[in-house]
Length: 225
Length: 308
Image (cartoon, rainbow over the protein chains, first blue to last red):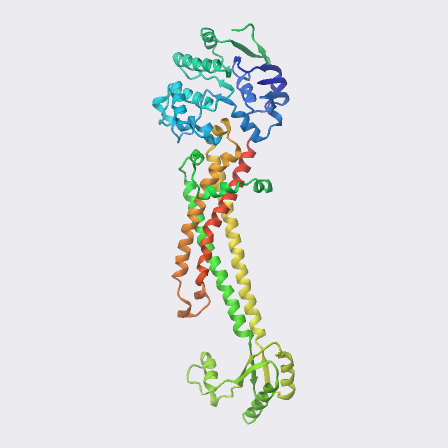
């Protein structure tokens, strides 16, 4: 699904932040990405959904070299990737239901209202369908963002510190939803520095592996969790 | 720009103007903002000016045709001679005119018509008979056979007091000025369209810049540049059409309530449309919508592509 060969990336103002990465994220896998703050976790995720392009090396997503994709090609790639950020952003003038359905809207696909209701119910947001995003709590925003991330049935779900602003119960609830997605065949990658979250995944009977960013490289960290 | 034009989905132009937004993409742009009112105002003002430029163009066109037509078929012979010779010289001129081919009618202006011509300078009740006024003979051309230059030379040779005036000296600068005014009107229309396009492009860029969060969210979920642009284009196309419709109606009303031609008879009072000509301003709103569509689309795509 995602394959990196000697991939390096650096922002203009500095040297390489990540260098010579060689790894494969197979379809249906579940990975945590760990590392200290500023180590490049978010940058790694942005490379995965082509928000950034490698400085060198080859990054293949869904069989396509992302460096060779057109702007429309990158947009199409992102429709196969659901992204969940710590600070989930919405269109504040649209109600939650329309925000969740937004990926279908921009892809000119019809919205199945029944499926939308079920999705909102799955993330526990049925009662907030007509609410505007500014009125939501942090946990509600994250769950709405998760619903939006998966409404197109993406093959790959990326979460960047998804529990950073949530209390522990809500963090577990969100983790459970991501585990359920993985069980339905989705590839999941969660960037986090919360080791308790990784430990909690052990209790959920999921085949999760951990990637660690260390010394500008991403390495598989030890045995399976 | 050429690639953008080639890739234009013409159905989206139509949908953007009057079609229903079934997908709801139009709603992804926040509905409020001072840009909306400014765009309406700008489109309205441009359309108002365009109506006047169009009216100017039509009026000057009519003026050029009128001057050209009214003077083109007539020639005047002026006979100036001492009082005791003028009748004889006038008779000789009439004789020559009778023999000249291409003349439909040669008529000596009677005293009352000469008096009318002199009224602006001497006032009414001019004693024409008492003044050494030249005799005027009006000639109406009857075909292509008329040779003004040949007639002028013959009159010079045979009747030294007779001068032929085919009005060219007066007609050409007037017609030329009227035609230039018409060109000026057309150029004004072009400038108005260009200024309108520039303002639409700036407004679209301003709107895009103010909606950075919207664009970030849309990109994250896989929206193509053209989809994002379309949401803005649709809105600006409609605003351009609505504003232009308002401006056009006001402009047409203003033209309709100008003083009538017959009342004063001057050039400015002839500014306006006649008959089917009143339909021409109705093209302004759809044209403004087209200008809004292309200007917004170009500006939006250009701006979106500039951001990685």
